[in-house]
Length: 165
Image 1 (cartoon, rainbow, N blue to C red):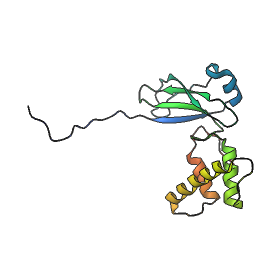
Image 2 (tube, rainbow, N blue to C red; image 1 turned 30 degrees about the vertical axis):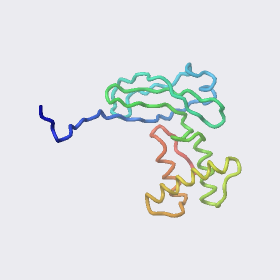
Image 3 (cartoon, rainbow, N blue to C red; image 1 turned 90 degrees about the horizontal axis):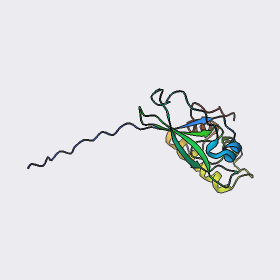
Image 4 (tube, rainbow, N blue to C red; image 1 turned 45 degrees about the vertical axis):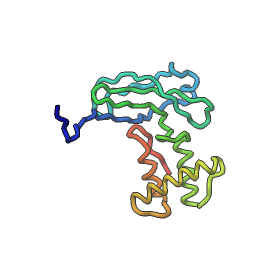
């Protein structure tokens, strides 16, 4: 019995994970839970396949709610991508609305002050992420409004409403 010295190459299927922003009312999601009528995408955004299956729910915490909210997921059997629905006003990976984040970061970049309505530590985290992102893009020490717009646009999907800064 001979053992091969070369490693075996295993190819994994392509998997995608997308966030789909929809115009939904967050208060209704909170009150209805799993019974909320989430809009169903007509096609898979990854491969444009027509078959999308319900893939259960995932919990997400959004500012203003003490309990986790249930967000609908869909799975495409053709490309194995899992798509999570999310309210259109909330950016990927953040519990605060896009409006709150953009106001706080505008206040810091334009006036060099933290916004008084949000905890300073959250704003510091957002600003640090913005600085790291801007530094990777163009070796910038202090980001400007131009960098802020590009940074926030990168956290959205094509279903997202444009932000006006």
